[in-house]
Amino acid sequence: MPTSPKMLVTGATGKTGGAVVTQLLAKGYPVRATFRVQDARSDLLQRRGGEVVVADIFDLPRDKSRDLRQGAREARAADAASRARRCRLDGEPRYRGLGGGA
Image (cartoon, rainbow, N blue to C red):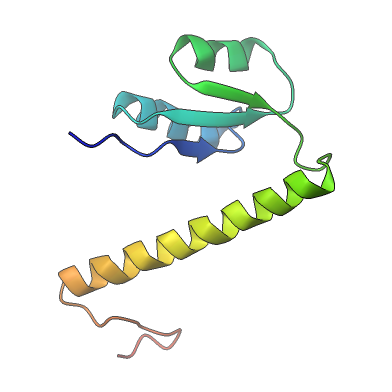
């Protein structure tokens, strides 16, 4: 049985990010979440099985910032590929521009 990909959640202490983490863990996905500081919220995530990374994205060394930007590009590309695949499976046009036409 293949393993699920590890999901990165930023903003895990917020309302939306916290809900995303809860749903991912409930569905069995491994979760890595970024927190600016280690506190009760990050401790709770660790107890629930998530991986915590304490980091402030505005205070990264240049090489780490470059890695983060590359990861974001890869995530956008994976999302676009997934959307295109879903459209083809649903019988919809492969791409619909802003005008909504085929």
